[in-house]
Length: 164
Length: 206
Image 1 (cartoon, chains in turn brown, green):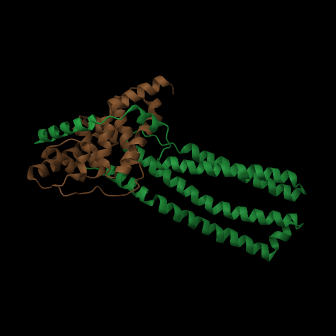
Image 2 (cartoon, helix red, strand yellow; image 1 turned 90 degrees about the vertical axis):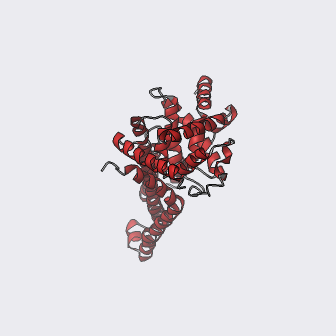
Image 3 (cartoon, one colour; image 1 turned 90 degrees about the horizontal axis):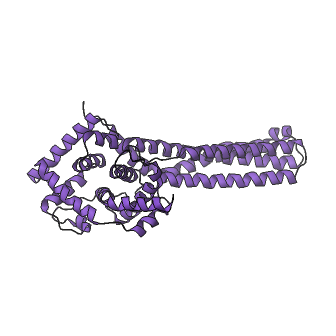
């Protein structure tokens, strides 16, 4: 690919860095894994870039590549997401931003979900419609909707009840 | 409460968006070697293909240099066909190992799971066949160069014992070793893929 493609790709990635950061943050706890996977996502996105025809938004396409890369990545340290005492919040310090208790609660609860449910709720909260979630995940639209409903109910009840 | 959930997420989004990847890091990442398991397996097959090609060329040269009679030439021709066929089979495996990461997650995971399993099976087969055939061919050729005939070789109890050891003993041992190595390297990974495939296959509508 030529320099113009590289330039365009770089700009698109920089505009959508948040997607990669979010996926890394939601699925990996080990800093070494995160660093390796960050590079792997960029590599896979660049390798697949010629197949991006602009039929969907670049952000949606990058989301798919990022999720697929994370899900097919062979983790070096097969740590389960660390369930820290909620008061500690060490896990979330690397966002370099102070967050409210509500944001911390949300992150904590989302990271406690299984990987598939984590993907569904994060896509929903990012504004994707049920048919788009179905298209990205491979679920049927109705199944995605039912799963989403259950996850939301679970999250809301836990946030409301402070049952963390 | 649902709106609270959304608000909390939207605020988090700002944090995710704030950390930018610089241009140099992107350029560095796109020229690296992939750590994707399928890519690693592909690399392994490519290395094997190189070795098979080296053995093919070496066998061809030895055949030309040691032409003695029709029998040895026939065995060498078999060796060349065997190596050529193995190379083509590996090439076929290699070409089929494309992992498209732009499709939906369920399809991608299922494809990866099936491909990785297929390659591991292929590795076990290679372990089974290569050691056995190489041993049998090597013994046969050396006996032919000593002036023995096929009939003598295949009725000689020593040769038959040797063949049996190679076919059953080393073949089984090779397969076992390949399986154990693959299990150690990929069992956990396959479980990781399978867990998420199963979660995606659960139908919550019923």
